[in-house]
Length: 404
Ligand code: AMP
Image 1 (cartoon, rainbow, N blue to C red):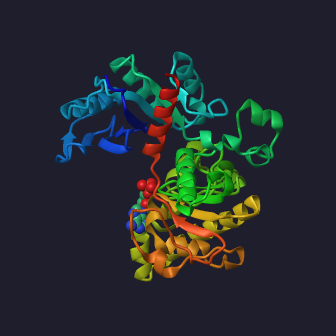
Image 2: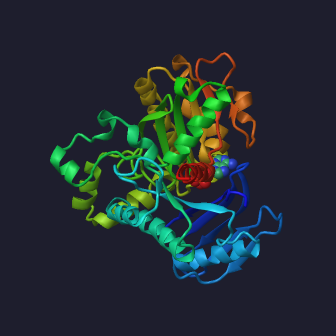
Image 3: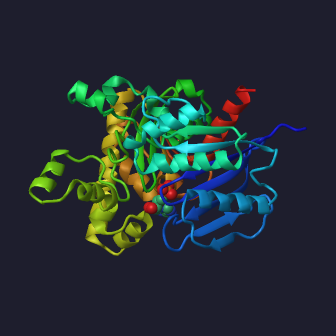
């Protein structure tokens, strides 16, 4: 019998489940899809049977909970002959958002691990419960199948204390686990490795600033493959300006909003996480729309763009100082991969640091990893499409294989 060689990657969010089935022999996708609006009206499952080359299938039906969502995934996969009962399936790899300080590596799921992820729920109250329900449902459907938790925080576990510890009362911080954890770790890890490959240099020998700019956005400083600082903190709110999150803000603004504005804590949470960032500044959180409005001379869209790119430049400068020598700045995720204007504006004026973009290379669109800086530049600027699913699948597969 041939060895099982497929990994199902699950990313269970609070109201959606995204999945991809990968063949690890060549990293190809066999199927992918998303179940949306779990627990809401108008549930929908969109399934792409990639290996079969068939039509995308969309099923509109109520999806009351994650169990129902995963049963639907299982049914659709079975319809392609790729069901959860397939002996070719080696593992399910789960994206788990918060691993705290406990989980710094991909981890085989056991009863104890489930309990420990549960203990971390207060640090990620929306995400970890969703991730756990994915794990539990797969256990019911295929109890014998190895499951691996790959943590969004794990890659940042190497961030030294000087960057990870907030300057607040030590006992309070430790008692309540208040410190910098960082997120998007799988993406930062994947992109830093791909960037070294793109430069044709060993990962251990290069220092890279990774800018993951999606709807959520974060920067990290990676020295020789080891993360030494990252912009997100205790939660994904800190750091860069994002689609709907403010990023860095004086914490005393929260007291002000509460005491003077009369906003309750939950309202401030909602304001800073869901109604701030680009959306709060100009009413749109999609960079494409902001670009269109800027072209028409819209002042708020322009200002939102300027605030967004100024914050980026500030972090790039800070991480130049953190790393001492920077071999590459890598842009990834929706905005980073697709917006030449953001890349150009974020790095404008950094020539003195050896960082610049070539306007012609930067304007070229494409899906391949590429260098967009002039050949003679001291620091390469790269566009590197991220692939968190492939990274989760690889880490899961290699852990399962090492367990024999
Ligand atoms: P992600 O979270 O990585 O899927 O990124 C989503 C974001 O990428 C969207 O909200 C857009 O702001 C941005 N985006 C996607 N395509 C483009 C594009 N062609 N140009 C500029 N921004 C884009």
